[in-house]
Image 1 (cartoon, one colour):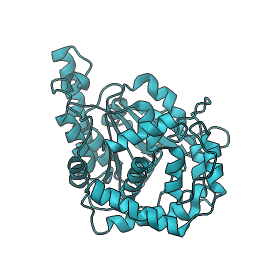
Image 2 (tube, rainbow, N blue to C red):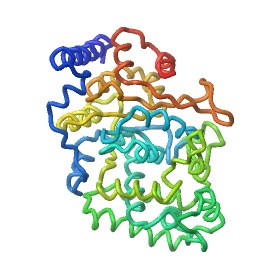
Image 3 (cartoon, rainbow, N blue to C red):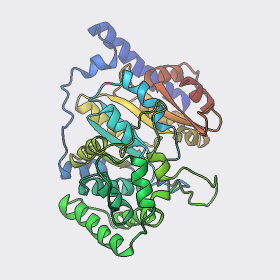
Length: 378
């Protein structure tokens, strides 16, 4: 998409916001969407969930990393700031695997859409979905996730660090893995009746086998073998806090675990395949949200925008974002690796950036590089 087309699209959005202000005296786009009754679902049927996954997705794409696990050690740091402005009941959008879960728990959206260019990310979310629904508590979830017998003495009050340390001392079991893998398949295809594609369950098995093999020491992996040799492990990431001492991970407490479990049981975390700069996925999510009178309140992009600039398609992404139903509080969550001042001991800093303010600066020609984007969120 050419730059002038993006600017026209964004200017059109801004014009609609201004018109809403003039006609209704409201606060922009939020005033517009209020004309449509908010009908975001409290739960999706299995058929609705799978239809959204299939119909809103784009073809499988390529990225040079398995990306089985986040490598953003400070991803919780922005949660206190977000909770001050993001109201519960909106729509969460994100990318990647498990780092989305603490954001969803803390921000309480009505529904979440996780869009990633790799269908492998959808496979991982299907694995998580099955295991989270099958497990009655955190300790049993980890037993399922790593295919290791549950150690004695774990209770609802056991700290997450102690949970992971306990499982690190237990050997993985091939027999248990095969049993659990079959249970996952039955859960997805019989309990939920999802019409998986031919390559979907082999994809789920591939992801699951990595968790079985590495256990709590699993870390971000690069498919081509390059990049940094030391990444945070699953155990280390689960033991992180929000920088102010509060642990907000999905395994930090039984309450957090149960909250995430409810989202999965109600089919409200919908994984999609899509390119952020592609022609369909993001716009299709936006149309669904508009049709239900909702607002996208949070969009976690990680550092995907860096790759969009490298591929010269970030402007198409900005054009896609401009079609989403937003309000003045809608915010990006993004990460900056190495080139931004980070907390001690980390190589990554997280930022919150108001989406509508960024779109206005794009339309005004003030966003030209990835560094402009990073500077906008500081």
